[in-house]
Amino acid sequence: MNEPLLVIFIAVALVFDFLNGFHDSANVVASTIASKAMSPRVALSISALTNFIGPFLFGVAVATTIGTEVVTTEAVTVPTAMAALLAAIVWNILTWWFGIPSSSSHALIGGFVGAALIGFGVNAIQVEGLTKVLLALFISPIFGFILAYLILHIILWIGRSFSPRVNDYFRRGQWITTITLGLSHGTNDAQKTMGIMTFGLVAFGILDEFVVPTWVIAASAGAIALGTAFGGWRLIKTMGAGFYRIRAVHAFSSQVASTAVILGAALMGGPVSTTQVISSSIVGAGSAERANMVRWGLAGQIAMAWILTIPATILLGGVFYLLLVAIL
Image 1 (cartoon, rainbow, N blue to C red):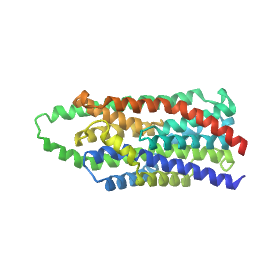
Image 2 (cartoon, rainbow, N blue to C red; image 1 turned 90 degrees about the vertical axis):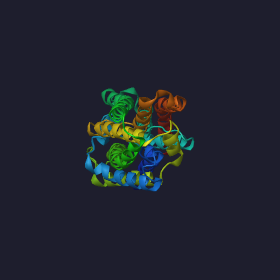
Image 3 (cartoon, rainbow, N blue to C red; image 1 turned 60 degrees about the vertical axis):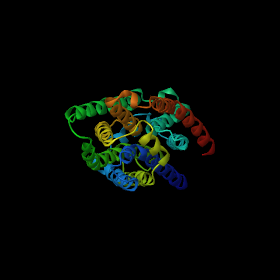
Image 4 (tube, rainbow, N blue to C red; image 1 turned 45 degrees about the horizontal axis):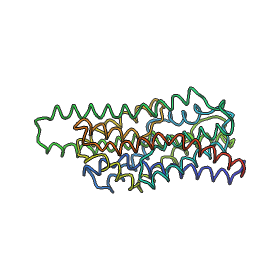
Protein backbone atom coordinates (compact mmCIF):
# COMPACT_ATOMS: atom_id res chain seq x y z
CA MET A 1 0.00 0.00 0.00
CA ASN A 2 1.25 3.47 -0.93
CA GLU A 3 0.73 5.35 2.33
CA PRO A 4 1.72 8.84 1.05
CA LEU A 5 -0.71 8.44 -1.84
CA LEU A 6 -3.44 7.35 0.59
CA VAL A 7 -2.88 10.49 2.67
CA ILE A 8 -3.03 12.63 -0.48
CA PHE A 9 -6.25 10.92 -1.58
CA ILE A 10 -7.96 11.49 1.76
CA ALA A 11 -6.78 15.12 1.76
CA VAL A 12 -8.14 15.70 -1.77
CA ALA A 13 -11.49 14.13 -0.79
CA LEU A 14 -11.78 16.41 2.23
CA VAL A 15 -10.81 19.45 0.14
CA PHE A 16 -13.67 18.57 -2.21
CA ASP A 17 -15.99 18.24 0.79
CA PHE A 18 -14.83 21.58 2.20
CA LEU A 19 -15.41 23.27 -1.16
CA ASN A 20 -18.80 21.59 -1.38
CA GLY A 21 -19.78 23.23 1.91
CA PHE A 22 -18.17 26.54 0.93
CA HIS A 23 -19.81 26.46 -2.50
CA ASP A 24 -23.23 25.29 -1.27
CA SER A 25 -23.49 27.42 1.87
CA ALA A 26 -25.22 29.98 -0.35
CA ASN A 27 -27.98 27.47 -1.03
CA VAL A 28 -28.87 26.96 2.60
CA VAL A 29 -28.57 30.49 4.00
CA ALA A 30 -29.05 32.93 1.11
CA SER A 31 -32.83 33.23 1.36
CA THR A 32 -32.64 33.42 5.16
CA ILE A 33 -30.17 36.30 4.96
CA ALA A 34 -32.00 38.04 2.10
CA SER A 35 -35.30 37.98 4.01
CA LYS A 36 -33.52 39.40 7.09
CA ALA A 37 -34.56 36.47 9.26
CA MET A 38 -30.99 36.15 10.61
CA SER A 39 -27.67 37.85 10.38
CA PRO A 40 -25.14 36.20 8.03
CA ARG A 41 -22.96 35.07 10.93
CA VAL A 42 -25.84 33.40 12.78
CA ALA A 43 -27.26 31.78 9.64
CA LEU A 44 -23.88 30.34 8.61
CA SER A 45 -23.16 29.12 12.16
CA ILE A 46 -26.50 27.28 12.36
CA SER A 47 -25.99 25.83 8.90
CA ALA A 48 -22.46 24.65 9.70
CA LEU A 49 -23.59 22.95 12.92
CA THR A 50 -26.55 21.20 11.30
CA ASN A 51 -24.40 20.20 8.31
CA PHE A 52 -22.15 18.38 10.78
CA ILE A 53 -25.00 16.69 12.66
CA GLY A 54 -27.04 15.60 9.62
CA PRO A 55 -24.78 12.78 8.35
CA PHE A 56 -24.94 11.02 11.73
CA LEU A 57 -28.75 10.98 11.82
CA PHE A 58 -30.01 9.67 8.50
CA GLY A 59 -27.79 6.78 7.36
CA VAL A 60 -25.46 6.34 4.37
CA ALA A 61 -27.81 5.37 1.52
CA VAL A 62 -26.47 8.10 -0.79
CA ALA A 63 -22.86 7.11 -0.08
CA THR A 64 -23.67 3.51 -1.00
CA THR A 65 -25.26 4.63 -4.27
CA ILE A 66 -22.21 6.72 -5.21
CA GLY A 67 -19.69 4.06 -4.22
CA THR A 68 -21.32 0.91 -5.57
CA GLU A 69 -23.92 1.69 -8.24
CA VAL A 70 -22.21 4.02 -10.73
CA VAL A 71 -19.17 2.06 -11.97
CA THR A 72 -18.31 -1.64 -12.00
CA THR A 73 -15.80 -3.28 -9.66
CA GLU A 74 -13.07 -3.33 -12.33
CA ALA A 75 -13.10 0.48 -12.29
CA VAL A 76 -12.54 0.59 -8.52
CA THR A 77 -9.05 2.09 -8.74
CA VAL A 78 -7.21 4.95 -7.10
CA PRO A 79 -6.84 7.00 -10.33
CA THR A 80 -10.60 6.74 -10.94
CA ALA A 81 -11.44 8.09 -7.49
CA MET A 82 -8.77 10.82 -7.59
CA ALA A 83 -9.73 11.96 -11.09
CA ALA A 84 -13.40 12.28 -10.10
CA LEU A 85 -12.49 14.43 -7.10
CA LEU A 86 -10.06 16.66 -9.01
CA ALA A 87 -12.56 17.25 -11.82
CA ALA A 88 -15.24 18.27 -9.31
CA ILE A 89 -12.84 20.53 -7.38
CA VAL A 90 -11.71 22.38 -10.51
CA TRP A 91 -15.29 22.88 -11.70
CA ASN A 92 -16.47 24.09 -8.27
CA ILE A 93 -13.67 26.64 -8.09
CA LEU A 94 -14.36 27.93 -11.61
CA THR A 95 -18.10 28.35 -11.05
CA TRP A 96 -17.56 29.92 -7.62
CA TRP A 97 -15.12 32.43 -9.13
CA PHE A 98 -17.70 33.57 -11.65
CA GLY A 99 -20.47 33.60 -9.04
CA ILE A 100 -22.52 30.92 -10.80
CA PRO A 101 -24.36 28.41 -8.58
CA SER A 102 -23.57 24.98 -10.00
CA SER A 103 -23.99 21.44 -8.79
CA SER A 104 -21.19 19.73 -6.85
CA SER A 105 -23.18 16.51 -7.27
CA HIS A 106 -23.25 16.83 -11.05
CA ALA A 107 -19.54 17.67 -11.02
CA LEU A 108 -18.58 14.60 -8.96
CA ILE A 109 -20.74 12.20 -10.97
CA GLY A 110 -19.44 13.66 -14.23
CA GLY A 111 -15.82 13.30 -13.12
CA PHE A 112 -16.47 9.76 -11.91
CA VAL A 113 -18.04 8.70 -15.21
CA GLY A 114 -15.36 10.42 -17.30
CA ALA A 115 -12.53 8.69 -15.45
CA ALA A 116 -14.19 5.27 -15.70
CA LEU A 117 -14.96 5.71 -19.41
CA ILE A 118 -11.40 6.66 -20.31
CA GLY A 119 -9.85 4.01 -18.10
CA PHE A 120 -12.12 1.04 -18.67
CA GLY A 121 -14.58 1.82 -21.47
CA VAL A 122 -18.35 1.94 -21.68
CA ASN A 123 -18.76 -1.44 -19.98
CA ALA A 124 -17.39 0.02 -16.75
CA ILE A 125 -20.56 2.09 -16.32
CA GLN A 126 -23.48 0.52 -14.45
CA VAL A 127 -26.33 1.78 -16.61
CA GLU A 128 -29.09 1.03 -14.10
CA GLY A 129 -27.29 2.74 -11.23
CA LEU A 130 -26.25 5.75 -13.32
CA THR A 131 -29.82 6.10 -14.57
CA LYS A 132 -31.05 6.17 -10.96
CA VAL A 133 -28.52 8.88 -10.11
CA LEU A 134 -29.32 11.01 -13.17
CA LEU A 135 -33.08 10.72 -12.59
CA ALA A 136 -32.64 11.90 -9.01
CA LEU A 137 -30.46 14.80 -10.17
CA PHE A 138 -32.77 15.99 -12.94
CA ILE A 139 -36.23 15.32 -11.47
CA SER A 140 -35.59 16.76 -7.99
CA PRO A 141 -35.45 20.43 -9.11
CA ILE A 142 -38.85 20.01 -10.79
CA PHE A 143 -40.27 18.66 -7.55
CA GLY A 144 -38.68 21.57 -5.66
CA PHE A 145 -40.24 24.14 -8.01
CA ILE A 146 -43.72 22.57 -7.92
CA LEU A 147 -43.74 22.04 -4.15
CA ALA A 148 -42.59 25.59 -3.36
CA TYR A 149 -45.12 26.97 -5.86
CA LEU A 150 -47.95 25.04 -4.18
CA ILE A 151 -46.85 25.91 -0.63
CA LEU A 152 -46.75 29.63 -1.36
CA HIS A 153 -50.10 29.50 -3.18
CA ILE A 154 -51.65 27.84 -0.12
CA ILE A 155 -50.07 30.38 2.22
CA LEU A 156 -51.27 33.31 0.09
CA TRP A 157 -54.78 31.87 -0.09
CA ILE A 158 -55.00 31.26 3.67
CA GLY A 159 -53.43 34.61 4.52
CA ARG A 160 -55.13 36.77 1.88
CA SER A 161 -56.79 38.89 4.57
CA PHE A 162 -53.73 39.10 6.83
CA SER A 163 -51.63 42.22 7.24
CA PRO A 164 -48.06 42.40 5.85
CA ARG A 165 -46.84 41.96 9.42
CA VAL A 166 -47.49 38.24 8.99
CA ASN A 167 -44.00 38.13 7.45
CA ASP A 168 -42.64 38.47 10.99
CA TYR A 169 -44.01 35.02 11.78
CA PHE A 170 -42.35 33.57 8.71
CA ARG A 171 -39.04 35.15 9.76
CA ARG A 172 -39.33 33.37 13.11
CA GLY A 173 -40.34 30.17 11.33
CA GLN A 174 -37.09 30.26 9.41
CA TRP A 175 -35.20 29.33 12.56
CA ILE A 176 -36.85 25.92 12.17
CA THR A 177 -36.58 25.68 8.38
CA THR A 178 -32.93 26.77 8.34
CA ILE A 179 -32.13 24.01 10.82
CA THR A 180 -34.02 21.34 8.87
CA LEU A 181 -32.53 22.48 5.57
CA GLY A 182 -29.03 22.39 7.06
CA LEU A 183 -29.62 18.86 8.34
CA SER A 184 -30.87 17.70 4.94
CA HIS A 185 -27.98 19.40 3.12
CA GLY A 186 -25.40 17.79 5.39
CA THR A 187 -27.10 14.42 5.04
CA ASN A 188 -27.19 14.47 1.24
CA ASP A 189 -23.97 16.26 0.35
CA ALA A 190 -21.51 14.91 2.92
CA GLN A 191 -22.51 11.41 1.86
CA LYS A 192 -21.14 12.02 -1.63
CA THR A 193 -17.68 12.46 -0.13
CA MET A 194 -18.24 9.44 2.13
CA GLY A 195 -19.07 7.40 -0.95
CA ILE A 196 -16.00 8.41 -2.95
CA MET A 197 -13.69 8.08 0.10
CA THR A 198 -14.95 4.58 0.88
CA PHE A 199 -14.65 3.71 -2.82
CA GLY A 200 -11.01 4.82 -2.62
CA LEU A 201 -10.36 2.84 0.56
CA VAL A 202 -11.59 -0.29 -1.22
CA ALA A 203 -9.31 0.54 -4.16
CA PHE A 204 -6.34 0.90 -1.79
CA GLY A 205 -7.14 -2.51 -0.29
CA ILE A 206 -7.82 -1.09 3.18
CA LEU A 207 -11.44 -2.27 3.07
CA ASP A 208 -12.51 -5.64 1.67
CA GLU A 209 -16.04 -4.44 0.92
CA PHE A 210 -17.95 -1.19 0.69
CA VAL A 211 -18.85 -0.30 4.29
CA VAL A 212 -18.57 3.35 5.32
CA PRO A 213 -16.32 3.60 8.44
CA THR A 214 -17.39 5.86 11.29
CA TRP A 215 -14.24 7.98 10.93
CA VAL A 216 -15.13 8.66 7.28
CA ILE A 217 -18.59 9.86 8.35
CA ALA A 218 -17.03 12.13 10.99
CA ALA A 219 -14.35 13.50 8.67
CA SER A 220 -16.83 14.18 5.85
CA ALA A 221 -19.29 15.84 8.21
CA GLY A 222 -16.54 18.00 9.69
CA ALA A 223 -15.14 19.11 6.33
CA ILE A 224 -18.51 20.14 4.87
CA ALA A 225 -19.40 21.94 8.10
CA LEU A 226 -16.11 23.86 8.05
CA GLY A 227 -16.64 24.86 4.42
CA THR A 228 -20.15 26.05 5.20
CA ALA A 229 -18.89 28.15 8.10
CA PHE A 230 -16.59 30.08 5.77
CA GLY A 231 -19.37 30.62 3.21
CA GLY A 232 -19.18 31.43 -0.50
CA TRP A 233 -20.26 35.07 -0.50
CA ARG A 234 -20.22 35.46 -4.28
CA LEU A 235 -22.91 32.79 -4.53
CA ILE A 236 -24.88 34.03 -1.52
CA LYS A 237 -25.35 37.32 -3.36
CA THR A 238 -26.58 35.53 -6.49
CA MET A 239 -28.93 33.19 -4.66
CA GLY A 240 -30.23 35.75 -2.17
CA ALA A 241 -30.84 38.75 -4.41
CA GLY A 242 -30.40 37.63 -7.99
CA PHE A 243 -33.78 36.04 -8.71
CA TYR A 244 -36.06 38.66 -7.11
CA ARG A 245 -36.55 40.55 -3.86
CA ILE A 246 -37.04 37.66 -1.43
CA ARG A 247 -39.40 38.21 1.50
CA ALA A 248 -39.78 35.97 4.52
CA VAL A 249 -42.77 34.12 3.07
CA HIS A 250 -40.79 33.22 -0.07
CA ALA A 251 -37.81 32.05 1.98
CA PHE A 252 -39.98 29.97 4.30
CA SER A 253 -41.86 28.29 1.43
CA SER A 254 -38.71 27.49 -0.56
CA GLN A 255 -36.95 26.09 2.51
CA VAL A 256 -39.84 23.79 3.42
CA ALA A 257 -40.00 22.52 -0.16
CA SER A 258 -36.23 22.07 -0.43
CA THR A 259 -35.99 20.19 2.86
CA ALA A 260 -38.74 17.77 1.83
CA VAL A 261 -37.14 16.99 -1.54
CA ILE A 262 -33.49 16.78 -0.40
CA LEU A 263 -34.10 14.74 2.75
CA GLY A 264 -36.61 12.47 1.02
CA ALA A 265 -34.12 11.74 -1.75
CA ALA A 266 -31.30 11.11 0.75
CA LEU A 267 -33.36 8.54 2.65
CA MET A 268 -34.02 6.70 -0.64
CA GLY A 269 -30.35 6.80 -1.65
CA GLY A 270 -30.83 9.36 -4.41
CA PRO A 271 -27.99 11.91 -4.63
CA VAL A 272 -29.57 15.23 -5.58
CA SER A 273 -28.14 18.67 -6.21
CA THR A 274 -28.96 20.97 -3.31
CA THR A 275 -28.04 23.90 -5.57
CA GLN A 276 -30.63 22.90 -8.14
CA VAL A 277 -33.36 22.01 -5.67
CA ILE A 278 -33.03 25.18 -3.59
CA SER A 279 -32.67 27.45 -6.63
CA SER A 280 -35.73 25.97 -8.30
CA SER A 281 -37.67 26.21 -5.03
CA ILE A 282 -36.82 29.90 -4.73
CA VAL A 283 -37.97 30.47 -8.32
CA GLY A 284 -41.11 28.40 -7.69
CA ALA A 285 -42.04 30.47 -4.64
CA GLY A 286 -41.53 33.71 -6.55
CA SER A 287 -43.53 32.46 -9.53
CA ALA A 288 -46.45 31.58 -7.29
CA GLU A 289 -46.82 35.22 -6.29
CA ARG A 290 -46.09 36.80 -9.67
CA ALA A 291 -44.18 35.16 -12.51
CA ASN A 292 -42.87 38.42 -13.97
CA MET A 293 -41.10 39.36 -10.74
CA VAL A 294 -38.58 36.54 -11.31
CA ARG A 295 -35.43 37.40 -13.27
CA TRP A 296 -35.77 34.55 -15.73
CA GLY A 297 -32.61 35.56 -17.57
CA LEU A 298 -30.51 34.75 -14.50
CA ALA A 299 -32.43 31.52 -13.97
CA GLY A 300 -31.63 30.60 -17.58
CA GLN A 301 -27.91 31.30 -17.09
CA ILE A 302 -27.83 29.07 -14.02
CA ALA A 303 -29.75 26.34 -15.86
CA MET A 304 -27.17 26.49 -18.65
CA ALA A 305 -24.38 26.04 -16.10
CA TRP A 306 -26.18 22.97 -14.76
CA ILE A 307 -26.54 21.52 -18.26
CA LEU A 308 -22.85 22.08 -19.01
CA THR A 309 -21.59 20.66 -15.70
CA ILE A 310 -21.79 16.94 -16.47
CA PRO A 311 -20.26 17.11 -20.00
CA ALA A 312 -17.51 19.46 -18.77
CA THR A 313 -16.61 17.29 -15.77
CA ILE A 314 -16.74 14.08 -17.85
CA LEU A 315 -14.05 15.67 -19.98
CA LEU A 316 -12.09 16.86 -16.93
CA GLY A 317 -12.41 13.46 -15.27
CA GLY A 318 -10.98 11.76 -18.36
CA VAL A 319 -8.09 14.22 -18.60
CA PHE A 320 -7.21 13.87 -14.92
CA TYR A 321 -7.41 10.08 -15.17
CA LEU A 322 -4.85 10.04 -17.99
CA LEU A 323 -2.56 12.40 -16.08
CA LEU A 324 -2.78 10.36 -12.91
CA VAL A 325 -2.10 7.07 -14.69
CA ALA A 326 0.97 8.64 -16.29
CA ILE A 327 2.20 10.00 -12.95
CA LEU A 328 1.34 7.05 -10.71
